[in-house]
Image (cartoon, rainbow, N blue to C red; front, side, top):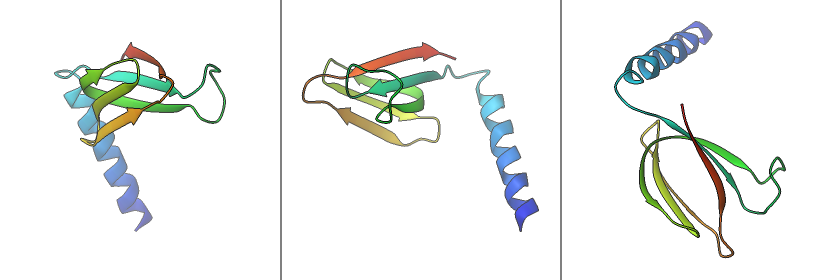
Length: 82
């Protein structure tokens, strides 16, 4: 069973590598406070952005999930193209 899981993981990586030739991916780093590198930071791989504002961020991840992030005082986020 462990070999099957490894096989599926490698197949998933191969699929992401193949689709990366046609789709641009972005790395999104979100921090809820002004300090980067602490435990509240989150990192996502985004495929498409729906809305980017000071207090709201909505995007689709590499797996196809739609993520909405809200911050009452504003969000600190960095977007880099992969």
